[in-house]
Amino acid sequence: MAINTATAMKPKAAHNVNANNGTASDGSADSNSPSPPPSPRRNHLIGIPQSRRRLRSKLQSHFRRENLTAGIFLRWNIRYLVVLPLLYISGLIMCVGPFSAFLLQPSLPGAVYRSSELFAKLWPDIAVDNSTAIELSSVWKFTRRLKVQRPCPDSTARQHFAANNEEPAGPNGYLIVEANGGLNQQRSAICNAVALAGLLNAILVIPHFEFNRVWRDPSDFGDIYDLEHFIATLEGYVKVVKELPDEVMARYDYNVSNIINIRVQAWAPAKYYLGEVHPLLREHGVIRIAPFANRLAMSVPPHIQLLRCIANYKALRFSSPISTLAHKLVNRMIENSSRTGGKYVSIHLRFEEDMVAFSCCVYDGGDAEKQKMDSIRETEWKRKFKRKDRVILPGLNRIDGKCPLTPLEVGMMLRGMGFDNNTSIYLASGKIYKAERYLAPLLQMFPLLYTKKSLATPDELAPFEGYSSRLAALDYTVCLFSEVFVTTQGGNFPHFLMGQRRFFFDGHAKTIRPDKRKLVVLLQDMEISWKTFKDQMGAMLAESDRKGVMVPRVRKINRKTSIYTYPLPECGCLLSHNSSLKLTHTTNMLESTR
Image (cartoon, rainbow, N blue to C red; front, side, top):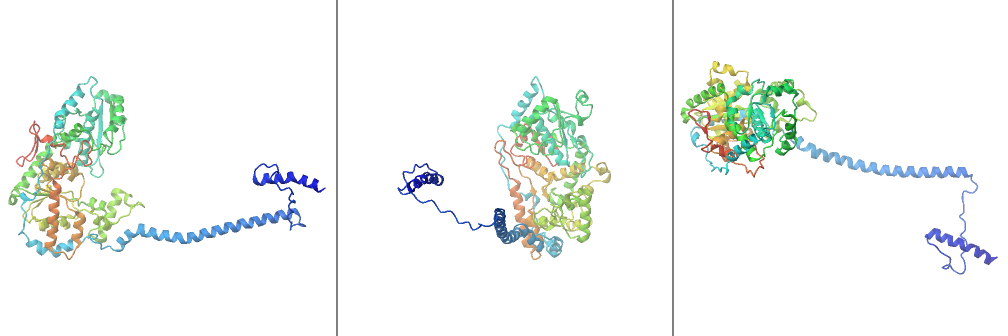
């Protein structure tokens, strides 16, 4: 029986090995005396019904899971309780810290307008200080030898555009653009349109001026610029027509808005126009791009860049009514500047009511000023300044140099630079905010202060009233011929003017561009002496002199700066003897000769 039992148990043992070790076995590795079978486990639940045992097992398993979950949850809660406050505190430090420091310290250097207080303190010293007056003829000391591109792109551009016009197919179609904005933003759009027409080999339709709710000037192209001169000057480069031919208009039911309008991203490169816009022009024969402000990149091929130069410095000439009155204003400024050899200083002052409101800066008008500015912002720009993501920090704006300079601040700066009370000043500006109050200190420092309204008679100005762009054109011309131009806020007006002055004044902008971040700190320092202030202003003038002759590096067609502000070297060849543009103080007009 023992042998039979052992024999019967042997396969079972082999089966267990297979199950436990996962390998096949025939039992040859076992001992000759087989192991006894394992004793069965003692079941302590004997006597309890099977259903109750299953229920108790489920309950125990459930409680174990609940305890495990609760433990994990508790541990995570403890971590959150520790980590979240730390994150909150670090967030406050990182995000709110810089602003809270600013808000809690409103008297940070430059944050508060105290210029009127400083002026009252320093006025006795300013009034008697004419001993170190600067000569207007010797303000600018830096010079630069201009390098002219060789060969001049003009010599090859005419051949290129003439070849395009002689092709059997001729031009690819008509280009219509809408110029928006003020006087000089429209000027930018016109010059870019000429360049784009050359790039696409298109016929340019005289640009339409979009009515702007801020400028509120309904003038057309011919009201501001000499239309016939513009077309004639571009002949041989780009063909320009006053309007679309009748047969083309008939295809669109004599409604320009039916013509395909292409929305172009800002500063689109030349390859975009050649790849995307050019096929549409060929397909439709006429295209419209509106709006067209800043829709062409500054980096374009040299012969296309030249078109911008020709349009800006040769083709665009103010209309006869504007140029005639501007000529008179310049002559009157020269006559009124006899004490300084016929030379004068011009200031582009941006201290109009809407400009002060838009800047969100605070001056010394108290609660009445704040309520007034809030009302203007609500009227002109609706809810733009009340968006939840818009944070208005007037002090920070002032520290960053974003606040318009007051007439008083400009006057103190110029007196500090050495311009005495015999200097004739031309003020180019719209209606000054609280003019009677804010202009008084400037008149006190510079009695020879003039504007277009003081130089022209009421009858002479009457045709220009209500036309902001035409009035701006008068200011532009008088500023162009000044010996010193002062810009106080930036924008298209000074950028175009500095470029044109560089073009005519041998590469020198002859422009004072104050470092407003530095200036506001000095104007808030109630302990500063007049001598120290003058030293700082002298250094600021020297820096403007140095930067006035700067020419950006232009590698092939890789230009990042505006050619309207820095026209050299690309536009330099237009000043050669074959195609000269002269600036003379006898006629005070731009003359285009060949």
